[in-house]
Length: 470
Ligand code: G2I
Image (cartoon, rainbow, N blue to C red; front, side, top):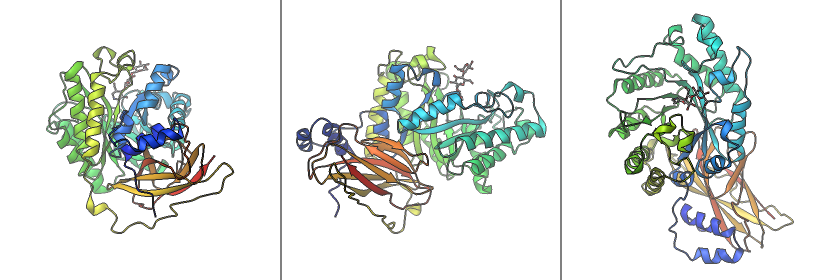
């Protein structure tokens, strides 16, 4: 019934070569399936994870910057453009220009978006800084509602509340004007965000929460445990992961991630950067990636900028590309670790896996087209408790010069990663149109494949497919 399933790696090789010429495909099929992910996003996708970066709208016109960002990353965070001061400069006057610019760049390049950040003690607009009491609480909730509504359906995960815990040994909340409106301000923000965009994952995001034995880590852990116990809508915890010599990657990082994940939330590395250089920096990066790959609910990693020169702490050269856009040793160690981790796949949670196979929706279609005909066939990939991988095999029924395939998922499903093709999305986010990365020429009987990860939200239904040839 189905065409023999290509592995992701072999599939990528075929697609990469099929763009060149039809005759080259035959040659490629004879090669061993050895190629590993050659970009961060491709390597992370092997295990159903994303690899992201923070983007500054003002740098998108820099060709080196945007081409590295487009090539390597598939999850985009606005570095400053969605913060409170940027989006509501005057009370009740919202300003989305730069945030929208980043979202549209991300989506037109087939990338997902992490929203950062709805409520924070820092980077508040001037009008908010001196507010207090119920007027501040209401202004904050209105902000959360308005901004989450504006970006509804376009954001994979929101940092709903950022950095609300105190540094040091107290393990308690940070003092701020928001905290002084009452201890329940965080859960109020989460409820408002859920009401505004029920499809977005809602995260609590903080720094210095990496070491399991630190009081701040424990404070956040206890809050998340309490939220889960009381049904406060929280889906994920973001670990900013800003490291330097005074604050190195802890050896118990995986323990921290695993313990949070065991509360029933996703964990994400959200703002990774590590000051330093050479092999010591590379090793620390590797340790962070290894820790994430060892936890099935660690769903992705975002670095806080593209080149060292783009960093908020550029003098510490904390990123994966140097100021000229060259790959650093840290880049190579991250890529290699992602590829290694792709073979030791994360453990799934059997209790949450489907007990029976989902009812397949039509898996193949062959609409007649003037330029030729193709068939798209779905095959299941790996499953996790919150997501699954799928592969679509495209078979040319006649000689074709190109193809495109739509993949429709059903709410609340979302496609969070893809490989082996160039995706675009419709405005609902449910319909992805995949086109070949190269020319897409296939002769009759030949196949190629692409893959994707679906965050299923409890709905295990297979996506429906179409294939159109030209
Ligand atoms: O501080 C590092 C990060 C810690 N976690 C939350 C993140 O949101 C935070 O990001 C940084 C940005 O990388 C900086 O770019 O947040 C800073 C502000 O808290 C950002 O700095 C601001 C400067 O304060 C502004 O003066 C400047 O206009 O960047 C702006 C744009 O370059």
